[in-house]
Amino acid sequence: MLFEPLIFAEKAVQRVRLLPLIGGILGVTGILLSIWSLAFYYEPNVLPPIPSSTSLTGLTQPFMNTVDGFVSPEVGSAVEDVMPSSVARVPVESAALSLEEAQSTMKMTAGTVTSVIKSLRLPEEPWPSALYIDENNMVMIEEGDKLAPLSAGTTATYTRSTSGENYRLTIIDDATGIGVTFDTQSGDVTNN
Image 1 (cartoon, rainbow, N blue to C red):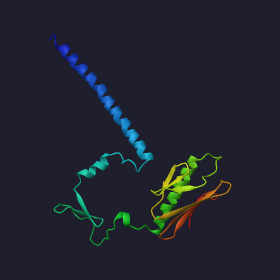
Image 2 (tube, one colour; image 1 turned 135 degrees about the vertical axis):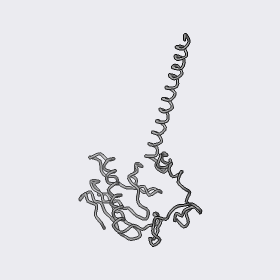
Image 3 (cartoon, rainbow, N blue to C red; image 1 turned 180 degrees about the vertical axis):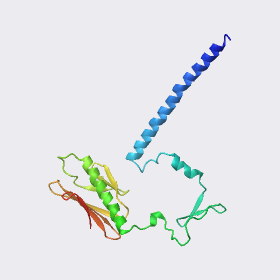
Image 4 (cartoon, one colour; image 1 turned 120 degrees about the horizontal axis):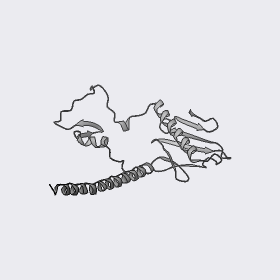
């Protein structure tokens, strides 16, 4: 009985030593995840996204083979076909956009570019003299700030007024010739 309080005190000291270690490990992990998150935000093509519980659930699903871009179940697996056979299956990456979808995508890109340019510019500054497109179809300004991704198969033209007070951004789909134009004088995105 005399030694019981000493044993209890010794276990308490061991617990107290463990808590700072757990806190330190969690703190370092949090800092590393924050740095990874910021790096992925500013350079999305350099780092893979942070693993999450939703990305890890794919590891527990049955393995699927792809044949000609279509997903087919592994031989011998009990996966039911939930789509009727009369429905045409087109891989997502090769599905053509409708006219409205293509124009909507181009309008969103023009709006995003305009919004980001506005946020980077002071009210008394002129609009950028030129916009650039890098090898990843990312629209950028001269300073290297990324504005928005340009859809594959589209071309953008940017024209600034000589005074630098207004500009016109036109995005055209190369295959169909449809496009949209944003003009700072009107403030509207219009279909071409």
